[in-house]
Length: 236
Ligand code: SF4
Image (tube, rainbow, N blue to C red):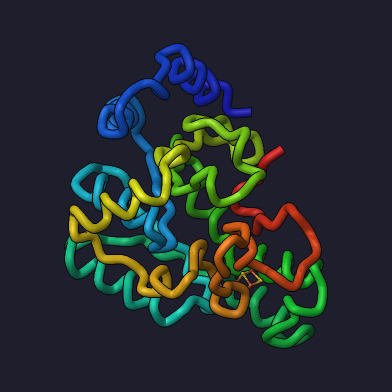
């Protein structure tokens, strides 16, 4: 248990940071914490956060699973070029990935939930653990609109599994406000968003959603479960 950091989290709660503006929240965390990281997948949400923090000391990182869409790589490239940014990149452990591919093949995630979770563990969860190890704050682009499992989340949370404070600045943002901010600030975005893709992950596991479908319907659509998270964000 990281009791020093947990105490700092209690201070965050006492200060009612949820009532501050987004800029004030970012300013608070950069003043009071040293090791802050932000995980980007180059979605609309993450692109706005990148824009807001690009001139701060916050480290931006991404998980390159090796199965991302070409459009995601294009957005990544456009972003680092436009803002002259370093995006720290984490990739799967090659030996583990090779063993998994050797025994199960490249698309075994379609065969069982177990295989899908194993693939997510190797390509995303284990690299994420490396990225947030010994950090104090992990900033995410999570929004409540994207999953019913996120309705009970708060902007600042204690992540017991990873022993880190999570800061979800856009949690209560609505899609139209997000799009307005992207357009107004001419922020580069993933072109797949314009084709019905909402939550964009790996290419074989993400599809566009139809009008009226749940935001999360575009991920692992072949699985019969309501809790379709990949293990990066664990909720009760
Ligand atoms: Fe593997 Fe699909 Fe998970 Fe990506 S989203 S890590 S391809 S199972």
